[in-house]
Length: 605
Image (tube, rainbow, N blue to C red):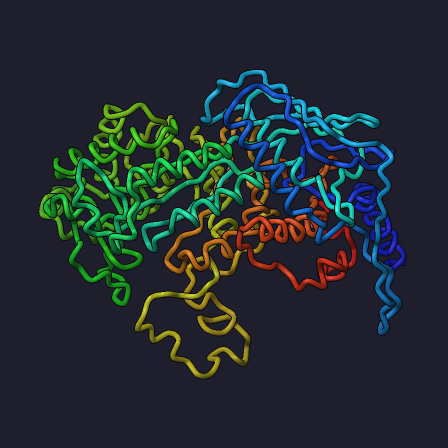
C-alpha cells in the first residue's frame, strides 16, 4: 500500500511539474511572480524595434539584451520534465528524452513596446521594480509596462531568457505569454570582499553581470579590512601605502566606472568601511595613536590572550578623539563618491583583549566600565559624527545590538539597519522583535565562503594520521568535521533556497525584513575563483528573495528549481560569468534522475 501511495505522489508531482513546463523549454530565473504560457504556437523573433521613452539606461539595456540573444542563440541546456519510469530493482529502463519541435504559427515579432510611468526615478532603496510583459496570440509586438526604468530592465532580462534558438538558424519565443512580476524584497544582493584579496574591476563587472541576469540589485562591497587598504582617498592619500601593490588600488575614476556600470544594470552599490574593528591597514598610516593592538600576536593558539579572530589584528581606539576626526573625513569623502542613500559602517567582531593595548581604554575598564559601555560610547559618538558629515541611512552588522561579547550597553538607534549573520532564525527574531530593520545574511545558510577548510598556516590540527573516533564515528576536525572552516559545511544552492528566514515571525516582524545578502568573504578568494564560488549559488538566493521558494499552494519548489538553476548555470557561463557546475552534465540531460528522492513531493511541507 505504501509503495502505491508513493507512486501516486510521484505521478501527481510529475504531472504538476510537467504541465507547468511542457509547453516551453525556456525557464527564466528567478521564476516570475506570475507567468502564464499560452498554447497556440511559437513566434519568430527577428530584428526588434524598440518603441519606448527616450532614456539612455533603457536604450542601453535593450541593446544589451537583443545583442545577447541574437549572438547566443540559446538552446536551453536543462529543461523541465517528469522523472522517467523505472523498472523494478535492479534493472532501470532505457532513458527517454523529451524532444520539442517548433512551428511558428503565430507569425513574427517585430516591435517591443515599452511604457514607463516615470523615467526620472533614481536607483535607491525601495524603487519600484515591477513590470508586465505580454505577447498575445497573433500579435507582432512584445508589450512591456513598468513604473520605473528599473522594472523595464528586469523585463528585458526576462525577455532575454525566453528568446531561444529554433533549432536551426533562427530565434523564437515558444508560446504566447503573460507575465506580471515584482520582487518580494527590496534588498536582494551579494557581498564581495576586496580587503583580504584584491578583486579587479573586470571581475567586479562580471559579478554585476550575474546579478543583472538574476535580478539581484544590491552589491554590498566590503572594500577594506585589516589586511589591506586598496581605496584611494584625497583626504588621506597615504592610506594606500597599505594596498598590496600599486596595481591593486581602486582610484576614484575606477570607483566611478564601477558605480556607473552597476547603475546601468539596476544594481545599487552599498559601500562598507568596517570600523572600529577589523582596522589596521590604511588607518595606521594616518595616525598610529588612534590604533590598538596592531603590533600584537593575534594569539588564537592561546585563546585567553587573543586579539582577533584572524590575522592581522587591529581596532580603532574608541576613546581617542583622533579616531572620530579621521573616520568622519573618510566617511564624508566616500559618501560623496557613492550615490546610494545607504552606507555600511561595519561594527562587527570587536575584541576586548585588543583594547588591553590601549592605555586610555585600559584605564576606562579599570574604572569599572564594561565592553558594552565602550561600544555604547562608539555608537553615541561615531553615529552622530557620521550623520553630521552626510545624510545617509546607516547599516551595521548585528553585533552592535546582539553580540554576547560586544553589544552596546544602552540604546542603538532604531533607524540603523542591522545585518544579521549569526544564529539564524533566533537573531532575526530577536532583532525584529526589538523593532530593527534587518538584512538577512545568516552564516548557517548564506555564507558562500564556508566549507573550504582552514587557511591559517602552521596548524598542527591537520597533522593527524588516523581517525581518533574511528570506533564510534563521532565527527572530528579531519574526519567528518569542519576541517578548519568555522562555518562549515559548504552552503549548497538547496541549503540557500530552502531558508525560510521569516519562519514564526509576526506580520509586524516580517515587515521589517528588508531582504537578504549572501556574503563571500575573500580570505580564500581572488579573481581566479570569485565567480565559481559566487555562481550559480547566488542565483538560488536571487529567486528566494524575488518570488520565494514556495508555489501557489505553499509547497516548497526546490525540486522544481533544479532544472531551472542547472540551465541558468549554463546561461551564466555562455554570458561570460564563470559559474561552477552543480552536477554532472548527465543530470542536466536527464531531468530528476539525480534527485536523492524519486518522490517529487519530498520537500513539500
